Image (tube, rainbow, N blue to C red):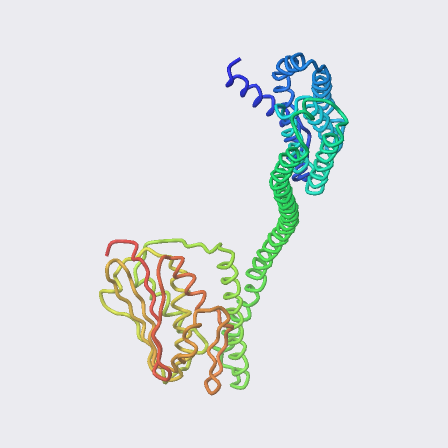
Length: 461
């Protein structure tokens, strides 16, 4: 039979044993030891079958039938281990197999002496123990090997038996040969056992980490479900906030504005004006909270349409004129773009663009008690740039780095008190970024601030 055919048979049978072995991954190194043992037994039986004929010939030559009897007994025992391997624990199977190895090695040493493989089988017992049982079993087998060697030395010295073994060795020769075998046996089996022990501890640690990861993933799934439910509740709350609060707020603002325009007592008019101003402030606050929540959830929507700058400013100017903190401001002035620039067509979200402009202009009004506010626009390389400039209080250098952060308000211990919770500029930046543009500013304290933002024109000039 060709050697490749034998190797393929062994490989297929070994794979069959591995696939048909019932195990759980939690067994760790024990699982691999079981697989190795099953494969080892199969290999021993295969080569034992091949070696059976030479062993019989050797027993006839030496006129010793004991080799044949022991070989057959060991051979059949290994077959029985394979047949009933699932019914016996691995530890018991290995101990039985090592006992068979000792029986075979002692028989071969006693009958064949130096020409037989007795010492090889003796050394293999420790390797099998190290591989399949662990460190202490390996050390125990080495001690047993030493005891067996000493017993054979005693047999030689006292001439207790007449055999090829006793005729081939003197005590000194036997001790010299066998001690080398013990040394080689020790430096191979003990490090192997230590390595496997470290591997087993590593596997257990890995299994512990896997269990922790499973628990962690389970908790993450729970937290994800909670977050999704929280997001759903937040969306429902914001929808109610948008509808149920804005509606009465619009009514309050509308009627207070009507009362403010009527010919009523100046004392009452002062109160109605305050109602209108604070109602508008509250409405702006609600709008900012809704907008920032939409931005955080990533659900901001941009609806593009083709329009002109003239149309944008026609919608913008009336809104600015109705701002309560701009009304009756005699010492300040706002200028808007004029001329051909107003006929420029752009493709943009009109409502979002107006939202940004209103926000920036409102900030300029708040921080420019007296002076001039200029709104400018220009086009270059199919990019339109807006500028809201003022000569008001300006932004302190220490505050400029965080001006676009959420909930950031400029700290002015001696300056005017302004309404707001610090969301306006962060909303502007999110809108401009979503629309494919960018926003920046320049400012000097007490000299004014200029906010710029650019957007793609989106259409031909």
